[in-house]
Length: 140
Image 1 (cartoon, rainbow, N blue to C red):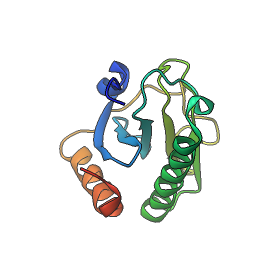
Image 2 (cartoon, rainbow, N blue to C red):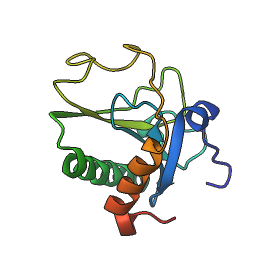
Image 3 (cartoon, rainbow, N blue to C red):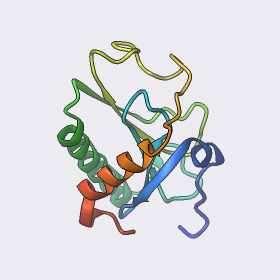
């Protein structure tokens, strides 16, 4: 675990929310969608099946916790969860809140439109909202 480093593309594209038991929780800097990412703190892992059984279960639990929290906070029409990794090979799990009114609906969001970065205090408001909602689950 000590040689884990967040992929530079995720560092560039995301805001850090905090740490869960296994994963770093990030928010994508794209104001078009509430978009959050779990990144297990394990070095050189590209696929879920490469995690040991305990880490797989922890990742599933963290994903469900995040999905439940996003469902409560945002009331989506659909929640897209995916581990694609074609551009960023480090294992990371996207959780994207979708609405029938969003500009990409019903298509997947990946590669559909360029990101629209948050401005002003928008990201801090969203980060604070998620930190409050996750409360004791966040380690820092």
